[in-house]
Image 1: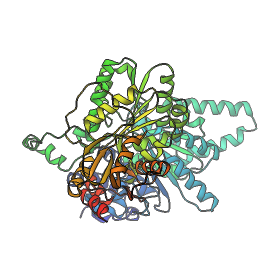
Image 2: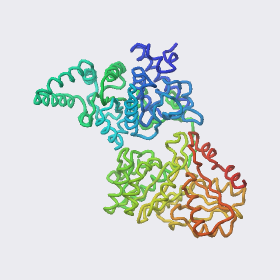
Image 3: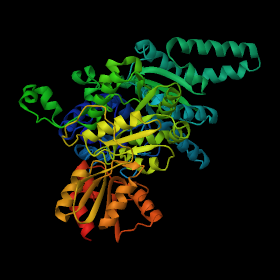
Length: 617
């Protein structure tokens, strides 16, 4: 019987020896290999945290002690060890396990996540809550070096150091950029620095030396000098943390010993752990971007490369991200003032080719959405034409900068907003349901919703040449296969077009649900208008449709509340041009959980059958 078969919950680990835990780590890694070959999912980051997740649950008393995983896509082993082992093959599927920690899924998921850099703030809040309630518990935040590029993480570090709370922050560093001191000497020194012997002498000597201030200052400087020789801890020490590390995150005995020592220490501690994404699979270690996420059957293709060549893929339509990437390069060739900005989403946003062709005009600001937007505003002040490529949900994090730094000053910044609407298996934290609602209430901004790849290209042209803020939002995934006329034509701002002429019912479509609108219109003999613009609205077209149809239907992949349909309603009421009936179709006021995109649109009532039923009802 394998050791993993004996583990259902973390308490089952308490009787294991360190040698057994080491064997268990090997079994966990193999389990991940096989299970993700069935389900697919986030791969590299989870292989990198096998030992860390195991050590945390072996040393701490979860769920009484809290573990907060930043982003959370590296928490699959955490899920395996907390009662969800047999459901891992359902991960990211409708009705299955979430790809991220989720409070409603397990009491071991201390905090729901999906976006980066929230762990330290949440963990500090938990530590404060425990102290106020006089409850004794350990609180741990696990944050990656990438997530530590966001300002929110430093705000939390600064506050935690000031409060002197009992908080352990584990910096999971898998980039190797600041980790040259990993090895036997560093591991030895870290274990020494976290030992009871060392901390006892440290505290005791300070009490004695307090009476001799010059000697105390000398001791403090000597300690800082010694730490500076073995690790990059000066910044964290200045923020009020006791810095420990770096240590090898795959050296389980050292990791266990260090965590046991740190568990007994008071005040804010930061443990720097170095891991390797894709650890244990040579292909994943060599190509960490490719193996960040894998599809079902990945392991079969590694074991039998001929399988990959035998699978002849049908030529899929280009994704909207790819269309944007091609447009960006084409426009950059034509306009030297164009600069591209992304908050750590080069691959996802389709900017790889641009970054290679125009490296001096490409700015990856890391996970710092607020900075990305205000950086663009500053560039626009100097006559440049910034294009900010950003996911819909990530732009939410820079809302104040969008209003204050761009819109109020009416600066010509173009926002290329990817992953709008329902995005599928990434679940609720990544749904771009709200951008039309939060954008259209902002003064000066033009908001555009292309229906297909060709419109996306030309609306990007339109936004780029507009002398003010503009946003083009488009969904995740492949387009309709529409041919793109790769010219630099712009569309008249605020003007839509009729795509089908019918009777009685008019469907006002905003965005890429146009095929659904046209299919429903065939059954209903309805008129279909491709509106293209949410702000400004095509008032003339709406007035014309009201005069010739008794029912208007608005269709959008955005929240119904405050979205494009609401904009139409506001115009109708203000103008007094009221049809007999208005039907607003969009994403309802509820959380849409993970599923395929097609399943999600059906759940939201935006598939063809649901549109027909809503109109007939």
